[in-house]
Length: 314
Image (cartoon, rainbow, N blue to C red; front, side, top):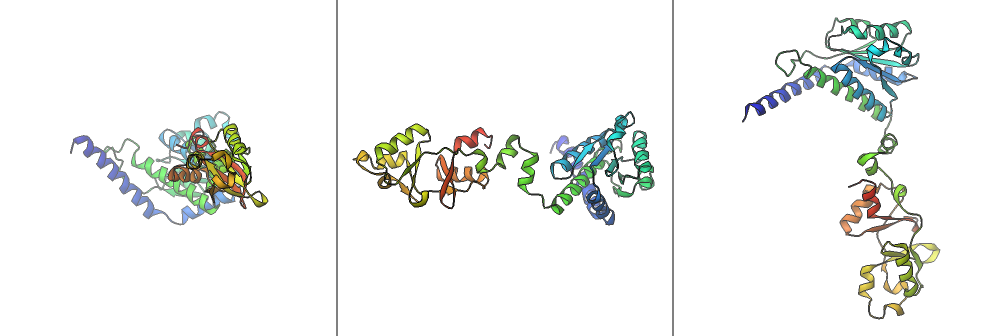
């Protein structure tokens, strides 16, 4: 094993031990922090300086994307006008490993002046931040992974994990679902994977009646460009589908047939309210390129595998 790998594994082991200590240290103050956030009528305002600020930005972003309105306020900018972002009804989370960071003094004082609940995250029990806050989330003693005690490593990892624990606890309390998550993540592959079939399907569909002559059915297939046509029966319900494979299997006397003679009966379908991810998985597993979305058997739209590709699902 190289010395680089030895260092990497030592760092990870040190931080893992810190996380285990953090888990064991959690108690009533964590519950109070959750209750304080839930009771707030406004936003969660997160603040911190330096590495704590970077962690704070991530925490605010995680809160905001999981149903807890939040924003990050830089403590230095707060001292030059941004304190106006912290208002009555909000709850503040201030992060400082030492609990004595000079730049946080104004935002802490602001919360005390206007009775804004303050949750402090720090690593020193008797620090100013911990003494001043309403709810203290104290990080347990743990060596920094750098081995010198000067580079924030274990402490920032513990703070990050503590923030994630708060966000997930709030998310579960609010019964936050993938549907809610997509509302805040409409872009990128994640948003695409959480899209509904109804978001991507085409309402204009290639459909013919079961008694339609194949001369007309072929025209419908070629006009719509999906390489398939659905076949409907009583009440407009989808009773079959005609694909290129069906055409090849009935090539002899094809134009003398009706759609019902050529179609594959009881085709695979999907509902418009299902995830497009499920539709893509179905198409890939069945080696097909289209699915009709139906409601009580009646076609509502058609989804092509290329629609999923264009949406960035693969």
